[in-house]
Image 1 (tube, one colour):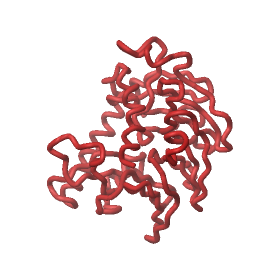
Image 2 (cartoon, helix red, strand yellow):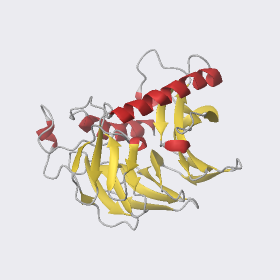
Image 3 (tube, one colour):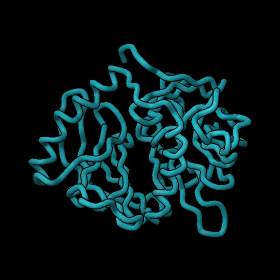
Length: 287
């Protein structure tokens, strides 16, 4: 299971490395700096001086952060990826509170007033505001992204070993799972539009990590970016017209129902029109 998480990440990270990263929108830099100023001392107080927060999930008042007990001194093996405790960070006022102090999670995401928690075995549970917790789905690979209404989420699902490695699924709060896209290789990193109709994801089915679009009804996926490119064309640098994939679903946000803004690596954010496939770096301006 842990090897699968890393293989999904490798799809996006390998292609993103071809991007001319290193540029960051000043407003994004301020958000990151502000988050560190609030989260770092809170984590040290709650978990001890060796603990570090290593992931941010979501935005705004419902942003969550993943915390490791300590940073390993040596690079970890594939099967030894540290699991996370979870805290909530409110971007609006800087408040930090512990959601779960056990180091057993791969990801977490706010879904409405509840929190979806994905453990190291691929079990996705929903913790409600009253503390009640229930199993939503199993064989979930990660990339949790909730609907704007907070009534469902999309995620990467793990294959059963007989078909494709991963697929993109829609999971409602009753635990019903619907596969939306399941192509050769890896389909991952889904995100759903604010109107709850459009699902964008990254696929390696053409040998180059590219954006595809489908619907919550599971329409045939349509390629949006890097059309006509093949993996050998990336040797020596990104070719003209290459659109880097996101580094994860946790650094995605929608600018209306048609435009997705995402982190392409190195702090460089891009904007993608999910109707036309047009994409470009988002280099400046206030957010």
